[in-house]
Length: 583
Image (spheres, rainbow, N blue to C red):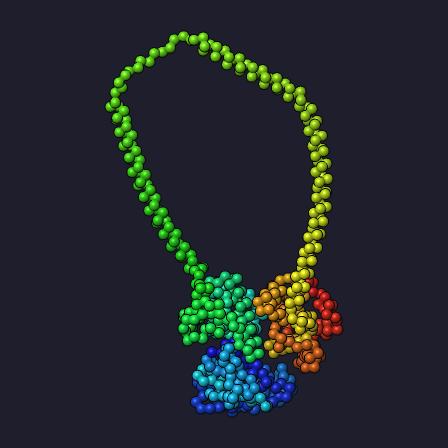
């Protein structure tokens, strides 16, 4: 089934049908027999063919939408609109005579000799000289007209476009963390947390995150890792399809197409299949282990605790029983001993006689002990008297010694303070030198073409509009989540991402002022001026002349264009001088 990368490639194939300046009409032609069940009717095709021109191609998740406008209107923004939705289903694909999708496989390529339109084509879209065919072998695709964009609004945030900045990643991570449902079933639901994720993308994300498809109650770090890996995988896949090259060799994608037979991954680890979220899931069981967490873990620990208590009580009972037995045995032996002692009668009886009178030796020993005691008392008294005489002398000496010691300590503290200040300054110098060296080595690894674009002004495409931006390097912003994301992206892919600052953003809150974009969505200032990107639309000009209030988006655009004009005249070093950068 075509997933977000393939559908984004189909959007690129539809883009040549957009003919805003020339205002060429769009023609629809039903092709083939037995049309798919969810197909546009012949009546709708007849009533809309030649009436509309294609103004833009939108994509959200796996859903495509062609924005149609009338040809006769002078103001594009105020013209009536119609929307034509296309969904690829299981096997749908869009093909033009010059462009197709390579599907990311290593050994599968489109046949250059294939006739156009290809087999199983049921709709052909024509605008001027450009043509695109909608082919669907299994007929699960769908297309229809609508008067609103409500169908896109029902979908969850897009997995590629709406995961560029940290605030978007955090909000998506909050939607998938601590959920009872398994992570794969959660991200496959197009209306719950994220849209655009299909079976192989989900398996690839969980494989790189080392998570089991049925893992529930994810932590904040695990959820952020899932969102980060998802954005990285989708952006790499889109670039590969645009360049017509296969997906990276280390991915699980190239090893999962074995018709559910066990195999090996890039590192030779065993690959197996199981059912998760209603889909067949490819996993490497040695790294994707199902861990008991959250509510499940509490029940397990409670059971183990009760088991331990039962075992402990059994042990205590057995110990008490053994102790009672041993004590009874000791009492018995003691009684036996007493009985044997009473039974025995002595053979010889010795009569005990009391002594009367004292011998001369005893008198001499008593006298010597008395004399030693008296001598000890005399020595103690003499020592006490000596101490009383020495005390004032000791006090004077102690005072002098204390004063000298205090002077020495003060001088020592002064020398220590001086040495500490020197150490701090030396430490600061070493840290500054270390940071400069780290910055220099990092920027030396960045490609020169990317490095030359740092602090260059221009325009970038955001949804349907081209907005003023300036491209930045990692050290053009203060340390934080944006710089960390840039560094992580560079280390993982060995490729510098394109970081832009949107002119007109509020300067007091920079959390939503930065984005990571692909190179194809950014044009230089000179090229944007040639395409009249620096001019306001007729609608905004009318409002300004009439003194009417602008919307928030229009105010940001007006402010951004003035900032862009001012900073385009400055040198690179002086641009964004108001932004305080802390290294």
